[in-house]
Image 1 (spheres, helix red, strand yellow):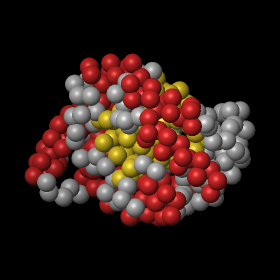
Image 2: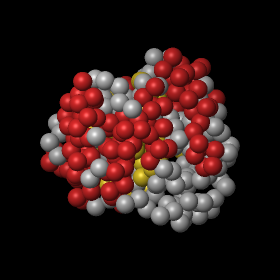
Image 3: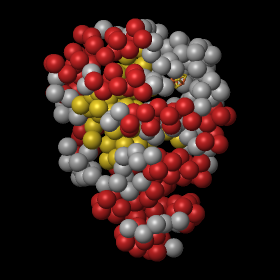
Length: 318
Ligand code: SF4
């Protein structure tokens, strides 16, 4: 089975998702990793893409996403603040630029910014553009076409909006907005001329089939940057007692994404500090070829220096 799939993928033929799922779930781990690695070498970029984010507005979110520390529905003791200052954002962008990080994104809590907040955010982007040479991304929730146009005109070239999970799982994890609304935002961003970054969180109780479904929707949407977050069970949220995925399950999932999305950047995002050093190395070998570096939102990632060292050791170019 694994040789057949390899042949089909390398011939550019369509591979049945059932066959990919069977391979990922049942073949020996080292064979699954090796196949994903070969696909990565053949189709994905060897130039590692590092991006960075700033939590530009924190907490007080009226939405009820069960994984999130920023929702007002749960008591999580996180720091809460409104839109951060231009100076702080420019300082962070410049610092990341110095490290060779290629992208910088403002991330805000909430369903979407109001008009006043959006004006402030656009002004921050223009200021960064004047002062730094770094690509600009935005992750501001369910913004509409007009808001996306304003962001694009202010220098934002990529919009981030995670699908989070499969359509079947989404409604069980959030009831204040839908995955369809997320897809509307993704399509609106593409219509504005932006590229889109969209992925999800694994380890929220979904099956490998759910993950495959999400990977296929992302493929159909033409997404070429897919963040893979590992659930960090945050105390106070409904998912606080969720059992962690094993490293084997994480590696099999990365391989699944690589087989369904051969050309995409698979981006290590939140929660990766819970994997061992060896697990991180194997994840990079399996198909992770991009990462959010530095400290991530409400969960601590790792220092940029450490990330750069690991990336280089794994044979990627920066
Ligand atoms: S909309 Fe965003 S900030 Fe608000 S609860 Fe959901 S994930 Fe958290």
